[in-house]
Image (spheres, helix red, strand yellow):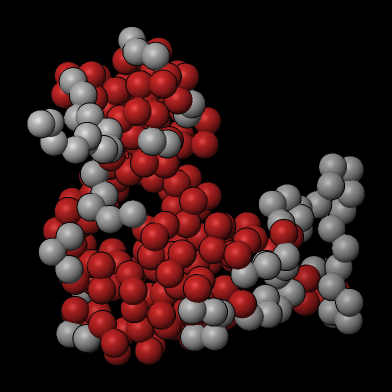
Length: 235
């Protein structure tokens, strides 16, 4: 008698997988995450695009493999969304810190240090974090489209500041605190960036820049002399 049929993907040729990864690193570095295509990566590896999907499933999973992230941050985001918007900022930074404190943390630190030292990797990683994590999270919160760009930048800058300060630079002000204390301190700021009112700053890319041929309008009620001080003509 024969045993039950095995299910799942076959491991395949490790050389083919390595060729795809090598090509993917070059394409992501040269074109960024957004403009990299499975077809271009497959061509660089000399394989059919179907093989890329066979080994890695999707472009997102392939990128995670190239930067060697030990966890899929999208899974963390999906769980946060399921728990609702209330207290999301505190839960978000708390979940991120838990991952960094786990055994996977050493690999994450190595990945961030590699990205910091390699501008091309930084670009691709930044695009991935922007499009596949934070922007996706904001869309799930029904964030107005005109605010997504700014909120994304604010959230990423806050999270990266904490992560780099605590785990890469080892700033004493952050390393001497527990993760719960950091989450309690940073959470409200993240919550404001995610769901709060952005007073006077609801700008999508390009808004706020004066159009060609137009002079910026002065602020209402502003004293002109505060902007253009009078010239002293006394001898």
